[in-house]
Image (tube, rainbow, N blue to C red; front, top):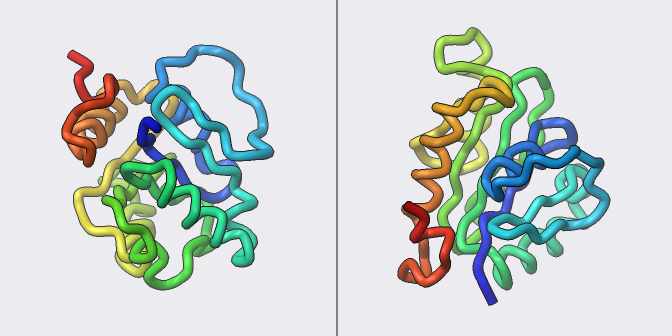
Length: 159
């Protein structure tokens, strides 16, 4: 089974958009009701994060199908969506992505603090819009470099 990049975040934070960019899909966006196993990603519905009783499903899916985790923080939201130390339950690398914000924005320190509390270590990535190709390429290059399977998957050999 191919290991994928599991993308977790609150509803409306840009998970599906990020997954489409990583997978190279240009089709329409739809609300995600269930976990969607894409070519290179696992798109997790925000409801899995909203309901703590669903965490066991996140952990199980990560153990069985994820080589790495991406946790999204929505800069437009004032809510803290992750419990303290949430990132530490996963046995693979966890990367933090702040959406709808740039490093210079006034929202950046609050979002960075949330990632720290969650247990996500730097580097953190900022994706400011759907058209942020430079930020997206930096993130994809970083994620693809974290291959845990020795580069056997085609995603990690894309050049």
